[in-house]
Length: 111
Image (cartoon, rainbow, N blue to C red; front, side):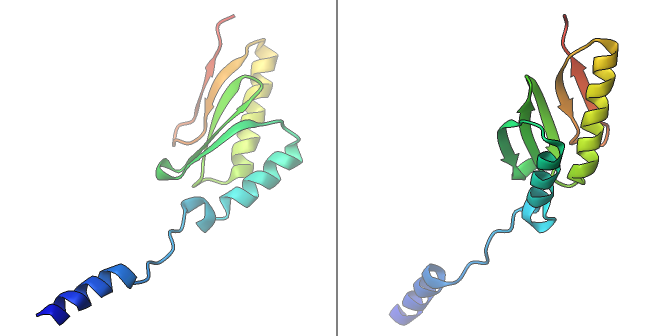
């Protein structure tokens, strides 16, 4: 009976665990994101990867932006640039752009 307990204990302590694979590494999001940001020459700050909800949060010029790790970062960056262009044309400033959901939205600041 002691050998049985020893075997069970040995099995649980020394078994190999498969490495945890994050979503952004599965679809190469981080590399594509870095390339897209560097090619656009945007100055980003406070990058936070939230793998458990498939999001990346960061700030650009007092605007909080949320990208989805499940979507193409280049397309999300194009949408971001279009939203900021429309805001400049209308004379508004954007405080939040959320591109992580199916229905993306932006929140404007009150001047």
